[in-house]
Image: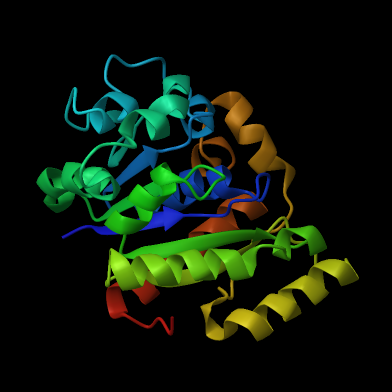
Length: 255
């Protein structure tokens, strides 16, 4: 059965969508079949992969107008796209019974089709994110190695703990991903040291280095492996995916 992983940080600009795309593509490189879910109304994941507007998106699925309808972007990598209309979904679904479990129910028919389902959460802690956490086995927290990026980590842990207590006892913090890292910068090294003290072994050994190819790839509507497979960005995400497989398939998580 497929592992469902949410990428969550309510601060924008930390590399969350970049990580969702390239973790998905990296897992494919390692022989896995992956479904990406664009749960962000900004639809940055959808735009970054150059997928045109679909008749059925995550918005229609959450409203009960369709099943999840993946689009294949390359062999073993499918995407359920997003659309700006999703921004109204939280208000539209607020009175739905069992509204926190809508996404979980949508996943049930397709779990056996994929090794991993990766959810790109919106940069907020609202109903969409709650649906993602309720349906997930693991949460990955991308964290830019800057001082302000650390603010709010306690809130994220608090939300995850509440979801685990009340809605999804299987939910675990799968790891913290240090992004936009430059080992030459004292601040970057200090931030990694601080989050390691806070999260311990949950911080991945692999750090995603600050790499221009990661910024260029979305402009070419490609993941980093399709755009620049020999770049530091591709090397880092492949290494990270190996750690993710080790943690999720061999249950070596200390959350």
